[in-house]
Length: 304
Ligand code: ADP
Image 1: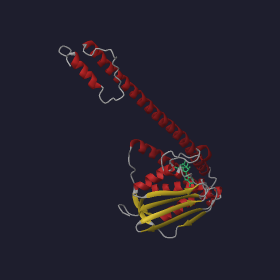
Image 2: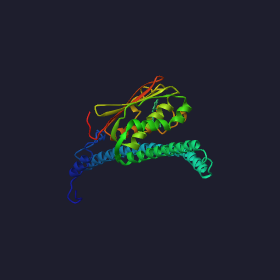
Image 3: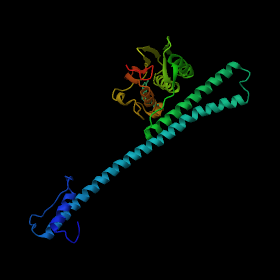
Image 4: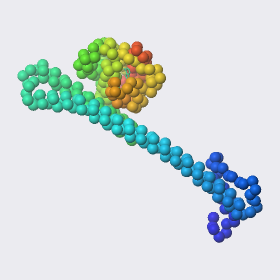
């Protein structure tokens, strides 16, 4: 629109068009306005434009408010994650340092049984640390939308699970839960050993944590090229309204102050299982316990 040649009529049309699509832009034309008068027309056109600007301003303000709320929530979560992670890292680290100090002072050197216990403890703690690193990595992955990369190898799930159960022996003793294992036949597949170990550790760890000292059943079987892991406890269970979201990140069905935890363990279980082309589901009722079922194709690209 060149200022030289444009008529009021053209100005009006251009300005009115600028507001097309903004349905709540109001045009207030005074009843006694003389629309034949070019100055009145210009006034009306400016009104349209002003209303439109106000509308856009309100939209931008509310979008900004939403964005700020989202960012604040993300920052709050990140801070919470850092503080809980730091806390959870501290315990295994302290215990590892004690083990190393003991070894350095030669306290356990003459006692093979004690040495074995201490090394097993160190192994458990370093696995806990590895698990926490995996948690932090998964947060990073989700923020940058990077898929999980698997290092597949031939793995016997039953042998792997036996090792995990062994490492939980002290926790089981402390919680008074008895672990009933049905790990009779080897179940071999092409999986990422550390990641599958993580799945077992998270599920068994939760069963002990929420199992109220009651028996926990671990069953591993295979059928038609699919491996199946069932971890069933008889503990506190999960409320039906929380169940659909339990595999989401940062979801907890209990308060962090009572049970601790980052609310990330199950989301990592699902991420790992899905990366392997498998599935995980849960059945649970409050006060009756929870049963987690993981299904994994034994071979890459295996279909069900
Ligand atoms: P967290 O590290 O907080 O335990 P998870 O992702 O592993 O995080 O679990 C999320 C939530 O799911 C837990 O806070 C708990 O409320 C619920 N949950 C997980 N496993 C069990 C279980 N075996 N029994 C009862 N509740 C469970």
